Length: 71
Image (cartoon, rainbow, N blue to C red):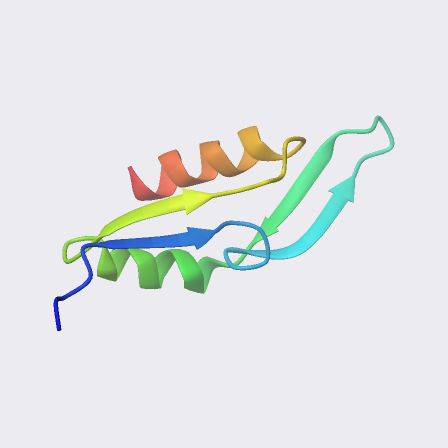
């Protein structure tokens, strides 16, 4: 059996709690779990990590979090 070369996961409900929070002005917030980031940081030297999201409204939030935390 070959070792996997890519780990693909959905951001929403995996790296986040799946909740969306809205400010009084309608700004969208997402809640991310810090433990998930720690685990993925440990995996990163050994396997390529890719993310998917079907959330069009919060995509930029997820993208910024991934870029800032995962490089």
